[in-house]
Amino acid sequence: MIFICLSGSSFAVDRASVERQFQDWVKSDLWLMAQKAGISRGGFDDATARLTLNWDLPDLVPPGTSPPKERKQTQAEFSSPGSYFSEKRLQGLAATGRRLAGQHAATLRKIESAYGVPGEIVVAIWGRESGFGQAKLPYPALEVLATKAFMSTRKDLFLRELISALHIIDGGDIAASKMYGSWAGALGQPQFLPTSFLKYAVDFDGDGHRDIWTSVPDSLASIANYLAKSGWQSGRDWGFEVRIPPGVTCAQEGPDRTKPLSVWSSEGITRLSGKPFPKSETDRDFMMLVPAGTHGPEFLVTSNFYVLKEYNNSDLYALFIGNLADRIAYGSGAFGASWGDVGKMLRSDVLAMQKALVAKGYDVGNVDGLPGYKTRRSLGDWQSRNGMQPTCFPDAGLKAKLR
Image 1: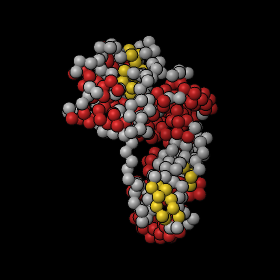
Image 2: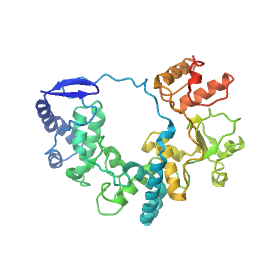
Image 3: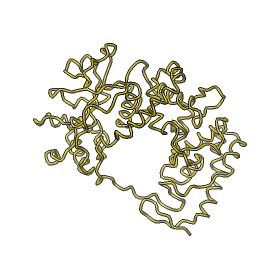
């Protein structure tokens, strides 16, 4: 009998018994699901012949145990958005990205011609996801996916990814023994989950295999194809850092509050760089983005910004990619405005503010103690209605006032 610790609780687990149950599950239940999905018997047997559980993965729920009680995160402090943008890291990625963009210039030109996505955007994602293919991927993907499909807190999700991984192997793109990924089952240099691989991976080098592990052309083109199929608009930037004048409220943020660039400009919003906005964008829609409210950099972003969020659903991730791409393409640097000293509040305090706003009829999005754009603009709107200068970000001074 082995004791294992799962999220702070100890369970007595007979690993040998669980391993036997796992092997039975593979041979019976998993095979039936794979067969129904169209995977060949020979391909399935070859892929699963040496499959074992990985007990070192997080969020495991072995048979006979219960999922750990969800631990509320409301007492933790959320980090300042500025902590996401390590200048040392961005400078290093940009230097390597510029070198590799030059090295693979011909391939990137062909990719942009085929998919409409600029090379610097593709290279930026490549760098962020896998260190330009140099990050170690130590986990056999099938082992990870099968373990989590058999005994994790999200079995259905990982079962779907496991079946997709078996499709990839059965289709001949890669052998099971060479399919490596992250501890969460993300594959190769673009860090695709298997379902994304099946949708977006391409054979760009023409060798008959979609190889996102060792082929740079396949990896880069697959990233571009992902963005193109997610709606990337060719010829458009991701957005611009701007200066929003004091008379313009920050409570206009969000993808559901678009305005033509000409309208934003008429309100006095200008590029922080001092350069004019491109004339080609004058009549096209832009969205305001203020991830730290008035305490940090401010942006007008295009629909392509939200395509970057399809790759990773985070405003800060998309900003990171946009800034890194600009550094690679233009040699630019950090955002012009500094990130203020924000993010020091407890999540429980922000949660209380969100609940108070909801009680007043505001839509704050997820009531989770994290200030997303709906929370930020609701705060700004509430501030304006109560005679305050809107800052669109929670702070200790607002806590007592918002009840």
